[in-house]
Length: 83
Image (cartoon, rainbow, N blue to C red; front, top):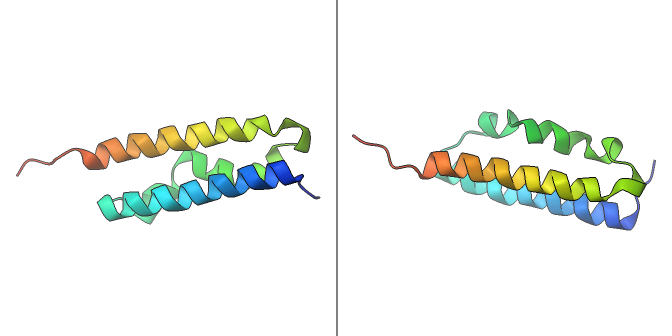
């Protein structure tokens, strides 16, 4: 099954966002296990087959969910801990 160019571009953006923001989270103390346990991770893995070529806007929703999930994780790791 092929994907139209617009879908390919959006999928690549999502993958790069996950990679870049995930690397930031790891630097802040998150583990790879925590990143993989995010609900959005499984959605990213399935996006090629779960989003039809004529519904590419659903990838925008996935991008938004990814950003929200990373923001939530970032807020947790940005919180200073008391000693």
